[in-house]
Length: 461
Image (cartoon, rainbow, N blue to C red; front, side, top):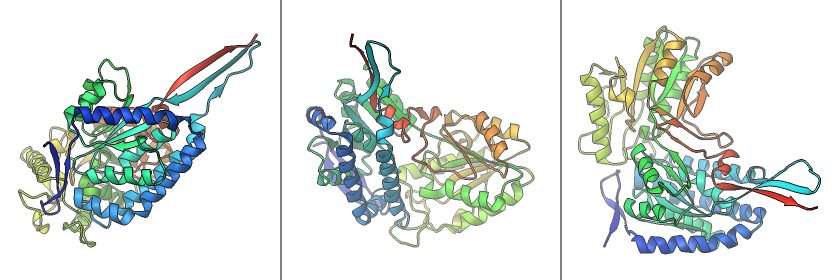
């Protein structure tokens, strides 16, 4: 029997065991989705959004159980996991609120003897492939707008967080969605690739690694279907000479270490004007040393384990490689007694003396690691921020709005922040450049990825 087994990073114990679907079962599920999608799309938009609003309410009503399960599955501190439910509701409700605007047709100016319009219709069956690090926040970005637009959705979740898929589908079914409209699928990567290649789905919304995105591209080759790929990041921030230093330090430490640094838009590279560099490092170290690394089920814990012991080993290797190349870790790991080789518990690292030859500055470490580097000018900061194969987000800390706008036009990123970081506003398009992927989620533009355009050219004379 082909099974997925989820091992908790909290204590290394097995917590979920499920049978994976084979290719035949996956194809049957996709067929049921295609059959159900026709009736779902035939409903009026307000009927679909009403049902989806009720589904979001049901997810939020079960927030305590879902949050605790997220903590057990991927290790986020129990005090932080409920925030994911709040974010899920915020994003989902915003996308429902803008659905009518986003899906509205375009009536062209009158032309004698003709009626002309451009309308949007659902693509059909959407496959959402969601990761473990933000199992609800990443999934909602495509699930709710895809369903609101009249598509059926198949959710393939990470095998580290399979309960999230089951809980979402159960909540939406309890809200009244018909069978087949929204389903989950536990399956291997090979089975998912075959499902895409065989024409069973019409759009793929993927959040994950660059390697995973390349696998999606390969599976979809020749199908000419839409693909939204939100991939990796090594996101930079620049602290200008006029920045509010304490605000910058507090915001960037949180941006680097929240969720144990396991965020595609988390801060991993910080460039600080050399007039502030020494004091910024001191404040960053003091804030980092205040974290409590521990069992994430303890409400006092502020830094939990990373997702797997194997991931922890890779993070430690990246830090060690950077140190061999000349970096220094300003954090004494001995302060974090739970961190130990062979476990998923990793002490945070604040690396100084860094260069772009080091892993922390040129690779996605996906852990509680940040490098800090002094710069002498805006131009130097921009050049270093752009010296990356990634381009998801970037941030500047400054009192000068016009300077921020000028820098934002020069920095290569899908989202540019001023005086904040590591946040998604659902009214803004979420997108990336370079190897951070392509496609758009959230905002009214997110609906455009999940629909196809049809032109009507009607001659009446």
